[in-house]
Amino acid sequence: MLNKKQIEYCLDVFEEMFPHAECELNHSNPFDLLIAVVLSAQCTDALVNKITKDLFEKYRTPEDYLAVPLEELEQDIRSIGLYRNKAKNIRKLSQTLLDKFGGEVPRTKQELESLAGVGRKTANVVASVAFEEPAIAVDTHVERVSKRLGICRWKDSVLEVEKTLMRKIPKERWSETHHRMIFFGRYHCKAQRPNCEECKLLDLCREGKKRMRKR
DNA sequence: AACTCGGGGCA
DNA sequence: TGCCCAGAGTT
View 1 (cartoon, rainbow, N blue to C red):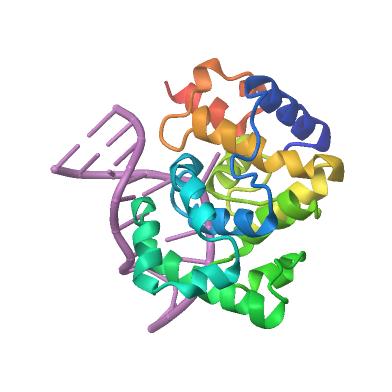
View 2: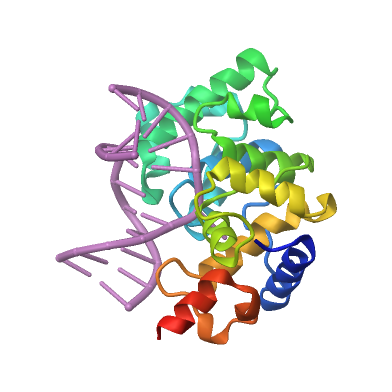
């Protein structure tokens, strides 16, 4: 298992490799961000970003999403996949915002997770990006990278990965952690063919050393 | 723990 | 073509 100093070194290397990595879904207001992150489940942000300009122009408030027939909203988000679930969730979520939160997006992770279509990962992203609440969002990239490097254990659950990261990374770096690890995981430490040959972290990477021995 | 939703991107 | 993907809900 890596110690705190080694993990911070990893973050520095991530930053060096992808200096411009930042949240691609950073929208001007919390409501649009929430919708964008809900839409991004199981597809890339780049794909979601293709439709958000038109979408957010047409739908500005929770009321707007409830004002049109469900089928119309489905058509508007069809190109990103999983559109029936997502359309249904967005309407349900909009209704909850009106009923329980005065039409505003709640700040806390717990309140966010009570919304339809919002799981732990989405709640953490919205809380940290929109409200600067302390949180680290763990998705498949963050989980894979953490396990390969040895930041956490192989058998750790997503929740355990999150707790380990929060314990070992200083709070002022939490907000950057998610996006740095995602870029590293998406473009370098890929799921199927990680580029260990050209990796600056090979010396301390548990999985990398194992893979290089095999060759 | 396994299954479903799903069109787009990529090899 | 076939496989995978910045997940969440249901069974």
